[in-house]
Image (tube, rainbow, N blue to C red):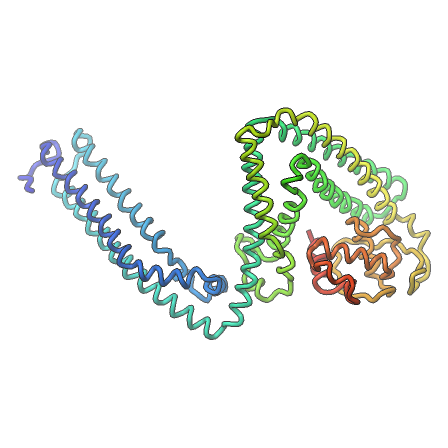
Length: 472
């Protein structure tokens, strides 16, 4: 094509059409080249995926044994990114051609013609570079990985197992949350039931919190505790509110409990939260070095999460489908469900108010009147309930052993609803049973251990779990 020194204002429709044709041909050829590169490196990409999709590779990458720049071996993603660049540049040039046709752009035709060639040449080079860099990167990553595996097989296997457990917990909780969100949207689209329940729940929680504040005010007036004890009052208040909300949620979803157990879902969320607290850093990524070296028993948290999650998701999907297809008329269930919820929360409030009063009384100064000499058996005199602020359990106990930390253990177990006895400091059968119930609830044991002599041990995993809950 020749321009004979034409200016932008002198461009003919034929010349502008030539610009458009050439640009279109360049774009078509670039995309064809990109597809050709994709086919050419398909084998390399497949070989890379057999390595990068393994838990051992993910473990090595998590420990930064594979450099960050060599970790991205998703060829499809890289090709899509370059394709997006090619199309965006094409759109810009195509728009410039349209502006030339309406005399809205002043451009030297030779320079513009060359810019279309530049568009092609630069992106063609990017495609070639992508091929070369990907092949080099994939080969290097494979070599580095295999060398690292040879020298650290046991370590990587150990971390990979822990990563699998960590990821299983994350997936289980997230899958149920997604299914529950879908169900909630379906119900809200057909009925005001969940909105009415949320309003009733908010009223119950506010009322409960106000009653706890009143009890704290009355206890301060009655017992005149020091500032540390008053601080404990408010710590217990927060714990009671948390437990109240958990129990309340069960009532909120009681209508659907035959198919969906909110209690099981809450347990999944609790497991995820505790694992995240242990191993997810400030950048919201898993700390694999810590996961590798910790004594934290992550497998107790991962136990049965997949089957529990699948069961809950299946139930929620059935409910969602039934609501969407009007097989369940949610509107007729609104009033009776809210009435049931309010009655159940009233009972729950009375129960927790009584327990809260008893808890504050047990840690208040008046309890000192019951303090006696240290005993070492079942008939030990009740002593002042110890503070549970910033507790870290470090000891194991034998049956009927007296220890200062047992008093704190009994207080914690009583606060959490596992223990109803006196605060004696003696590791009594009642205390042992409370520990056992805690172990069952937290999936530390299966329940088959009770017939064995060591079922009641306050051992490492139990202490670690309790310590993690107390640090919340």
